[in-house]
Image (cartoon, rainbow, N blue to C red; front, side, top):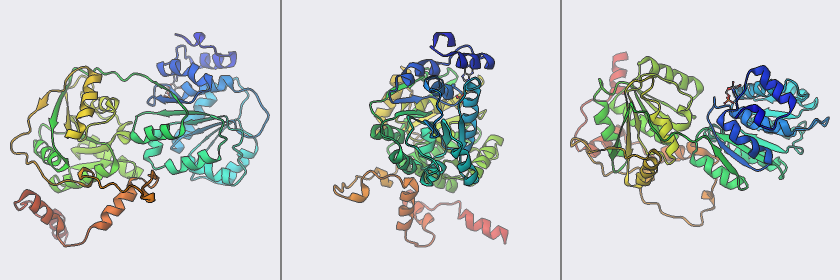
Length: 449
Ligand code: AMP
């Protein structure tokens, strides 16, 4: 298919010609008619697949010239960098169209943006916080919005913007087309679609279910979190073999929890990235992992997406991804550039179904490995593994996850009582033997003195 086959108008065709683009990418091909139809749409596509044009081509084609001042198209994105990038892409396509595009984001002077809004706009690209502030100031009127695009929804939810999105939905006209793009499917994204979209059409470029030949896969059945930690400790002790290890977990709290465990066992050899960490912290972690200064990196699916790191010896799925596509993305981080890579997946009994879905997608079974004898099976359970006591009518618990993981984290922390030297005590209890490595933090303190 070429762009000639899409029913584009001359200004768009000429703009594409100038860019030298002749063929639509797969996501553009699939999106065009669906977005044009006015139905709600959910697209699963990563950056670099041409997703911006996938929603912008049909929107621009159908956006008639107008002199009205209020924007008719709203594009929400999670970061200011993306605001700039999306505005640039729209401008490229609008070379021969007389439309007004504006990008707004936080951390800059709101008054300048108010003035720009007052000039009249057709398409507004914004981060959620700044958009809401502008709407509240009444300079920005959202009553003419016909199309709402939310781009990188997964990142947006991961950054804790759900609440802000809800507020924005409240002030938008009810009759509108919702278009959403996400690079990864997560439970949060799923929930948002179910709650706010009307029977959306889903489009995605099929993730290849064929793993690279040079990735060796294996699967361990492990009953619970602490046993997984013990297995991980056993494996990571082989420093020569496990020399650059990317460990995936599903959510932030688990990432922090695992990081704490690894710090006790392999002090200073690991780092963690997820969206509650500052950008500086994340960049520094990635740098140290890339340079080999740190051998182990723990990451969530959403945050690890943009990473392009060579020579990863092992990808370890500390949990089994619910969405098989995420497994394919995870393991694809190793075995790059023809190098051999190893991908391991740990799964509890609860995660068996997820393993089956992954195996169905790949149409192959992941070879199973026995747990090494020296790996101790722990009986201790973490909060999520304990049987849940159902509180049926607790209004506080009804579907308000807007506070995000941090809320839970705090509650957990507050529950702890200080009994002094507690870590060693719990370890001793768990392993029924004294830990010999000593209290590293205290040792370090001594050395510094
Ligand atoms: P995106 O996935 O939207 O971030 O786009 C990635 C890059 O691909 C952007 O620089 C686009 O300008 C470019 N691009 C978009 N569509 C096409 C196409 N059909 N052919 C070639 N390049 C494209």
